[in-house]
Length: 440
Image 1: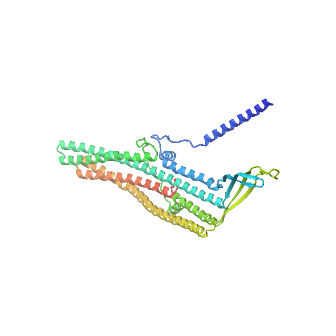
Image 2: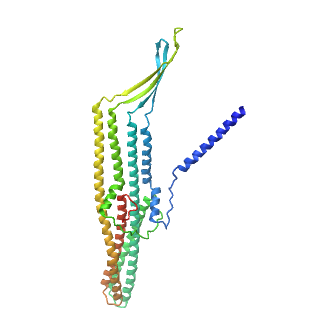
Image 3: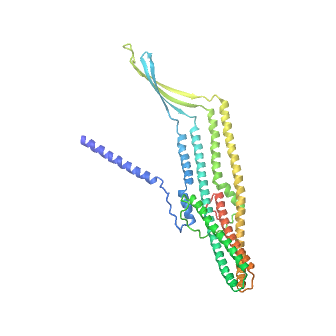
């Protein structure tokens, strides 16, 4: 019999250990895994950088944890208050017919008025929803920061490339003028002028190379990486056309912008707060039990000697101070109206910003087309014509320099317009709360 008992206990122990192991394995598999080290190589694209930022940016992680903390608040406010346990020791025993009362134990549970716990849970749920929308807002802002820095990185790299081409052109021109000067076919003043132009251009090139450091540092900071970490060189910018009309875009902002959605959640929370404040007109009540430990009666033969009495208790918190409760309802209404006004103010700001961003986007697109399709081809053609004429001695040196300056300015302006257009599209996506905003 004893061996059978031991075998049963051993079986239960093994089963319990197996269940604990499986439970631990499940919890480990469900736990969020660390994504601190995200691989970024020279071949990584913009989408890879956005994914890396979403996984490793500490600001986004902080917003996520605040959202999770708010979710954990919901079951807390929906639960009943902790019951109150009391103990009393009679320093002077209370003598009764059945014996002296020596100790008293009591437990009391408070119950809020009907509906209060549900309303508190609803308010906490709306507060958690607001945190979720703030998390989405942080994510959209982070993606915008990554895109803006990435596009700026592209612009600087293109500027360097354009400046290098022009430096090579001027270095070639310097050799031509130097050769002509040796044979008496060019003035020394022309050689000095081209050397001055070359020095100025080389200085601009050095500045462009130096500005790479802070631009790359800004992008790496958004990715939670060292400021000098390796980054892929952007090859091209998004060129898709954006054809959504102004009214449609305004509706997207009103409907999808996470800042407005967060304020809507706060407004819903304050609306619940009004109902909760009105519940304070009704009493909360408590139910409890007292148990008194009684000694034996001093007189022999007493019926029920030493019997411990038990008492049931009910208590009410009476809402007598009507002025206080009325003020609470007015406070809740005022908080709700404040949130509604805040929402309107934020919407006005966002729509005003949208107008400016949309103007800059369209203006940059117009300039990009103008430089790409008209000004750059003409400036390139003009430079080639003057270059041939200059080498043949049929064009003035200053004409060549002016043509070179014009082509350089148009080339940089074209790259700037492309960059600004891509950055403003990223800003429109952030305002509209949609990463895949591409138009119709």
